[in-house]
Image 1 (cartoon, rainbow, N blue to C red):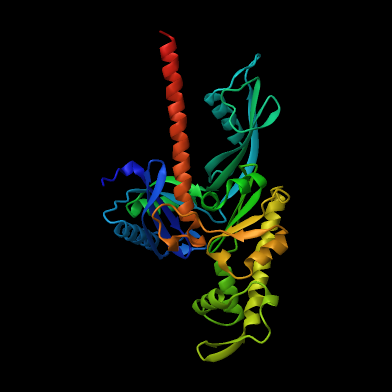
Image 2: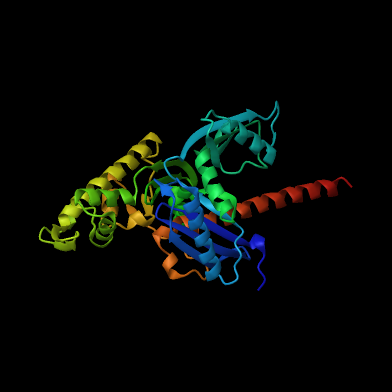
Length: 403
């Protein structure tokens, strides 16, 4: 079967621990898995690219692995996930009077309202990733999703603006470009993870998505179907590992293994008598509860930061559907219990939805960003295509009616 370049969607997720590439083909408006590659990340520090050459090498290796697994796959462009403490969002409102008399709202009017809402002051290095409509307000009537075609005298928009560090984004783009892959889209990691894990009902009722990565936790809150808050918490899975390594005087490799196999974020769930014999490097006996005491303290700290972010964003009471955890850090035993006790809402761990022909091992929380990026790009491209088709149809009707 011949491969059309514009039908291939590729997601690049450069994480602190792993670099992932997942490719899918768009066939009749549905995604079909084509290949993927996963390699150890390099040149990363605290979620950011600190050395380009090793980071470029890792990206190239992941791309080559994806191409090989896809059999004759040629990856030339990709969509990258963007996350980390340098990302943050803000809410703003803007609008204008349509004239002295009511008239029909056009797509240009919508763009004008959005342009006015986005013209808020921000630091010079901030790059806008997404302009997300929370709602439109027409003649003081709120709750409108798409005002085009309606009639009114004043149009306003509530906007959520997701931003990132311009230099950090450029480092990611440069890394991909120098590995031989052009960046066509950049997607906020929390929105990508949400795309592949949240249901429509959860978005409507109000839900907090937490993507717990290696060095940060990406946060996005949805309410009434719209994004109302995004943030990044500078705590991730490696902080749990480092706490164990320091507290138990062991290597980070051993601490990671113990966390993954025996770790628990709830001390009282671990029986008092349980012990482990480890080589550190000499044989040593440790209590499993000692591990849990360290892990619980960090888990509680993380969720307190999340709660503070929700309060600062004014959305702490908007979580009717609770909290959804994804990312590799969500798999720590007891994390759900800590989340529910600290945020006082129900919580669940989510894996990304499975696209056609996708291997079962990709249906895993650690692939939420990569799979979600594919779905996000698919949806946004379909939306743009529908808007272009609508414009062409209106122009055609105007031309036809003039003769």
